[in-house]
Length: 238
Image (cartoon, rainbow, N blue to C red; front, top):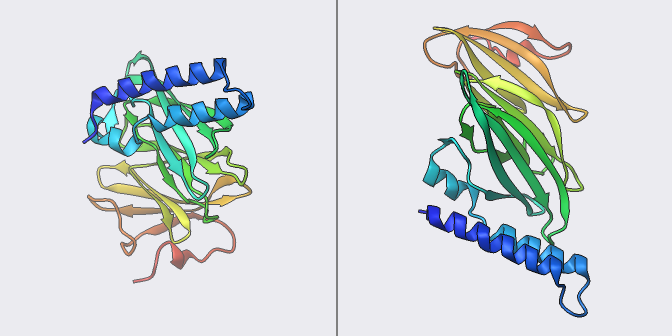
């Protein structure tokens, strides 16, 4: 199990390395190369976010600074959380993601406003292009969570594609994102989404009943469906 003390010491050493390398580049080494090496060194000292989650738990008031590696180009994503304050319905804050390539060159940085306790992001190829995409739980203070999707681009940058809300979300369900949300004590809706032109768009919406979240073969009714799609793909006949 990761040591929480190691998080702080790693961060301090990483900051010193970055400051020293940026101030004095070795003789004969371009300054930008020294900065990139220092940046990689600082990020490498951060704990893996999966290890951090095992220490703090899946939900936490603060995600310690940690790193994730996105495939296939091994982009390094470093996470930083900032608690903004305590609101009427719970805490709120910001989660900032910085991206560098495997050589240490900065690619981009973006933030999400969070509501409720922090939940750790996940990497998954949502749109099937072979590149890991970033899923950030943005609101965790209700039965149905809000998830924000950032799509990895060919150049390593990440672009916001939209949000889905659900009690349970399957990000690669038969070619769709399936967001199952509770709408009553025994009522559920499932929104099926696909990525089109870099954005999430709803393909179908179904409704079902039961005390537990519906499964793939459970009875349901089509509420909405995009033109040209087969309803049986979402509500199979029994």
